[in-house]
Length: 462
Image (cartoon, rainbow, N blue to C red; front, side):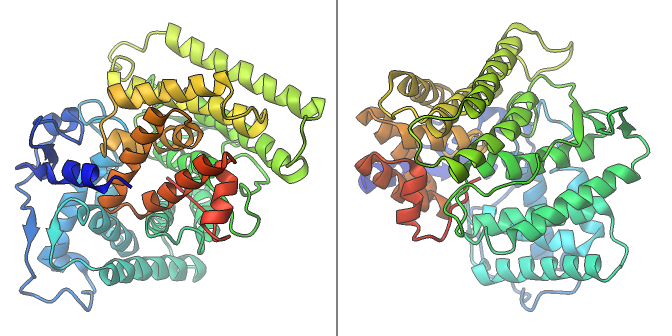
């Protein structure tokens, strides 16, 4: 581990007056300049001393304490922008910064887990003498317990609030390295709650085929919740290894099979790629499930499976080609945004790379595989800043390309980027560093490296 180089990179940064990391030498923001230019943040000090009023035990009404009111402001002005792909100029009605905090103020279970999420993020960018993992765990546990007691006890809770609380619990568990403990319970709750929310919404159209049509503009919250669930259960699934089976978890149905989405943005504001990709990744997972379950060591695939994979590849390529050749709607700024387009390209190449390695089982050294790696490497090198919100939102292409890298310059680049994340407090990046070392040394797939390095404890990266 070249800790000197990474430590110099860390030490050459400071917080600017808006609470963003800035490289002292280049004056370049690690967080996207687009976000810095667009957000009018309150003055956030880089050091927060011990509160004069005790924080623990947790107050019954969290916002009665000034400390938690400040954390909520931090979420609205900073965290909410950092965990979505689109910059604020484009995503002016980002639910993370508007609707969701408003719902949290009115619902204590959601507020507790939202604050725990914000505290985890804030601990990575400034020094808070009040912060502790115990504080985060107490908030998460209290919010989680309230959610379970409300839903199981027959008490009235808004379906969208239950869905959001469950999603924040899942995300917080993954960030803390305990993603598999009760994960399925809460993703199932999120999906059930979303379906209830959609059924209750009279503005949602039911199509002749029985599917729900969610419009990005008209049904913006339901649309947003579905893309968040899709990210966890589809994109996240492709980077997940179950501790029980040491395989990608098997799913009985596709996440999006009961929905159709009508987008007004060329690129999804939350995901950072063409929304059609999410449906395509949803279709790819069952193919991988079958291969891992029935043909894990086969040198060739049955014609039925191979035909499905080839059909998937053709459809995926057609969608990407259509995206490239089609202009966005008048007034839509996503199609012309260079960062979002770089993100979209990275996800396209990652999808193809995933297909070639996990379905076609092409060797890592294959020229086509390495061309995909090089494409993703160039995208991150030229268009996506280290430790930025864009890098966070494109962790899937970043990870799969890193695992399949062969050239020393590619490996060094990806390793250093993950090392920066780890030194900055991302615990999951520490797991990635071990996986990269193992998969590069052995030449085996990253899934097999997870089995060795994680000692059958599973792996989940989002």
